[in-house]
Length: 543
Image 1 (cartoon, rainbow, N blue to C red):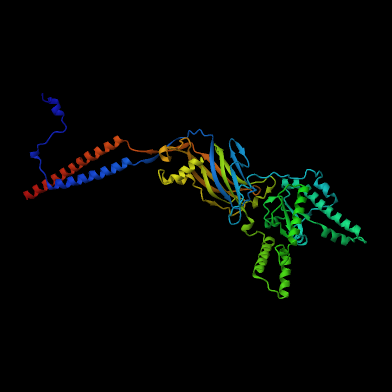
Image 2: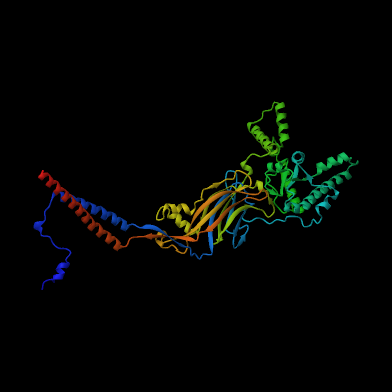
């Protein structure tokens, strides 16, 4: 039984008798071109099918994580670790002096860390005043003022004339200074009374009494430490030249030079400060008994003594070593800048820094964290506070997430994505004037990833974060301490990166389209060329 008539009419692949087909040289060339084009398109389509693409989808952020983790490593170029604190502020509340998961390293002028890390993690609580001192400052001053008030000239005189000079650099508006004032005056009275007792004891052993002049000289000789004070409000330039950055600063001068172990930072009680002075005096005496310390010009020579020694050596035709001359010039230069410049030059050794690193868990709400100069026992000087800083590391997310993203750099994720993970790393922000600080505004975008991007062991519920940052220089009032502020705002839109590959049926469809389309287009081109050739021959034959 043969096919039905309607099936014959449905045949879309009717055969053409071979005897009516005619080959041509032009058709052979066009066929080769068609086959070559099909091969090229087939190879490109197969390559595209075998490769994958990373695409990003945008949607509303539906994150359920309660906190946002921030990793940072920031160096404050001119801020001591003891004053550097981190505060977190958000609409849900404030947290001051965050110390959990925070480490600090003091760095010197060359940026070298102290060997002992984590040494300034927490600020030490000290006694701000001596509770045993019940009298007011006015009551203590009724019998005279024992703590000597100094200015620029008299401070230099006191340094030249006293082996030990203990100075309170204060500001009249400072609350900590006001609380310390009665204790400081009491310390001065105690030291004077102790010296007077020594003089009286000697007086009993002598056959004759002291004259008034002899008594004053004996008091000056026997006084172990001169207790003095400098008001930095009225002696602004003097305090600047001594690099006073916080009030009160209790500084001991030994042989006219600041004590090598730094300012006094212990409990502010009469007993503790007296013990400190006693310990310093004992150490100093031991050093003075060392013949290596006594011989020659030592580092405790004051500017006037250096002049006298140098002049005496020149008069006696003694040879002065180059090292000694260089040291002498350095002392003179330092003295000149400390006492003759209204605005001191920058000397790196006077400006130690602090590297702060660690992590913070912030609430997922708009807020900020900032690095500020603050102390429980000092009032910071606003114009002496410099919060210039360098950002070594600032990234958001879990440590594993950040490490994975760094490992897959330049692989599946686009390059522009890696530039948004930590765009502020390596940036340096320097303030060249007082009462200035850089504020950073960070738009944080929650970003999630397909397992094919970061590996099958990856936890999809641990997102990464992209950051769009903008930094501006902010100006502060004269009485406000500057701070390095990082304002964080979470974007309501989240991004999702996934790996996209072509399905097999799309690949087969493209192959069929390539084969059929190529034959069709090339056939149409061949037909057009044949028609054009026929007309050309007919026109030539007619002519």
